[in-house]
Length: 110
Ligand SMILES: [Zn+2]
Image 1 (tube, rainbow, N blue to C red):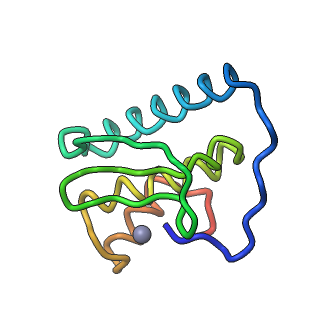
Image 2 (spheres, protein in one colour):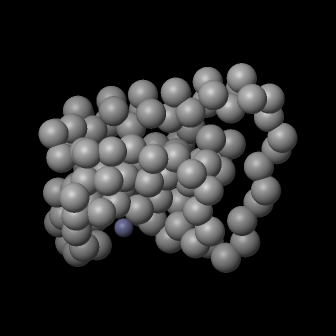
Image 3 (cartoon, helix red, strand yellow):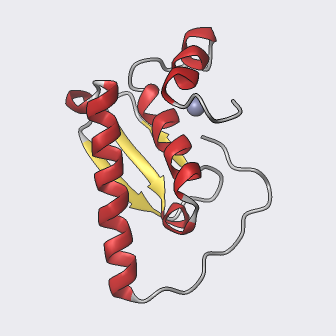
């Protein structure tokens, strides 16, 4: 999922808070993967700094999420997570992708 050009810098967090936030993000990703039914397609989940994207996925099931997501609101994290996990089912942004995104996130604007 691409980023808007301006990216805010995350606030400075303690190492413990950062570690907890990472675990929470992983748990959120795993819970959504089960709900969407793609948990078997995930080979690896990475959280690391990314410049141009909030997240990406490879065809081999390696998911990468930007560390800066840890400091974003829960609703936005959820949008990024669902968007990226849906790519394990549908690699493009076509009509089916948009329909599923809407089905899983009915309250979001996309
Ligand atoms: Zn996408």
